[in-house]
Image (cartoon, rainbow, N blue to C red; front, top):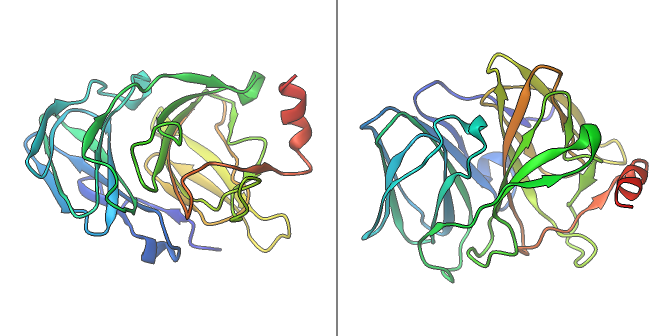
Length: 267
């Protein structure tokens, strides 16, 4: 099996530390901290830009000499309240001091220094799909927001029994405007937490075809291919997506066998 499913390394501190080198690709990095109230995390960005996402809880966040104060409103990710997020450019230093127990995601990609540190606002909940393909999106930093050099970040809530990232689609060719090459990570959560979901990562030629049972807190790497996921009845699924590639645009193609679903539901 390809090394696509990453389990958290523990329950406290930095439980995920996925670098581009570790993932054997060129752009996306993903880290995750579980902090108790009063604990802190701090990192230098180096040559990478960062979007910090307070998945749960509250923290004081600063970037260099800019103190953004206490951020965060939702204590459970499944409240579906927009997350507090901060952008930090490359060659900067960020720090987060937890004021409650919190979960902090660190999304990274190559930076070019074109954008300043800032709090990311204006995140709305958007409904997408029909029937058992319905899901709810917080587009944190997609291409319509000119706030980052490389990063595309979004979070998705998939109701129990529904499918997401479906029909299967891929974005693994640098062929704009038809498609853009974007590496991607999925940070999964389940509600209730003892649940599980499924994610399949596969190419049309069968070279890569892995189906994984994902638990609360797991991360799935998507280096190429299609990558749908589903949540069984009784369990709501959340995931945080991080994407990056040579161009900060999201252009994809649906699997030719399943595109009829998209065409039907678009009418």
